[in-house]
Length: 236
Image (cartoon, rainbow, N blue to C red; front, side, top):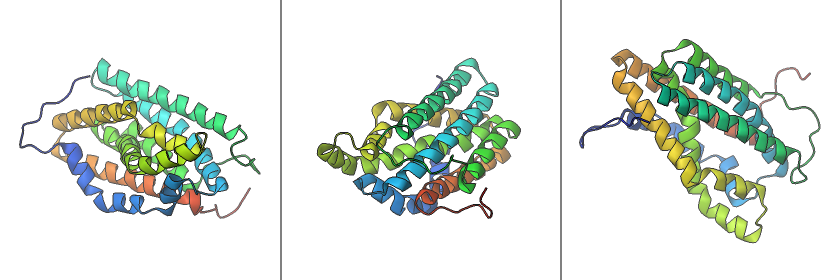
């Protein structure tokens, strides 16, 4: 993977993306869902709802990453996004295994996309398909970066939960994202977005900020609706 060179006093474009979402990220950190997830006290039905929705989300996210890979500027970059798409599919299969286990309550009905989940994946797929590569790359970055950022803060509580219950599904989930392997992937995604920004026009760099902000909004909504679901107007 090619890593862009930054001068000592330069600001990475991804730093600008991060700064633009400061208020949104503070709201994410304050979510009751994440606090309860970290300390292991989240109701089991809410965790099942989250895992069900995340399984659906990952299928759409893999499509967005695959489209992004097809628009990548070189083979190495394409390979990174394609491998990330494959990783999302593998992660979805692990979710399915958890949902099929005895660790969570049985489902009353077949899961369907929540409005937040459907909006998020539709936005990512549409952006990957219709926007310039750089804008699409910025849109998929929050799912990498914010997950890792949240996991770092939850990991301390998760370790305490795992000491008390080594099989606790919540703590195991947090530990997956608070890992050196996942942080390496996040760093790789950031570097590629920085590289894309150096080759983009000023208008595209502004659009990158907007796409990163939009995806971060969906991250907030996605997590929150697991604990505070927003039903569709008419249930089928």
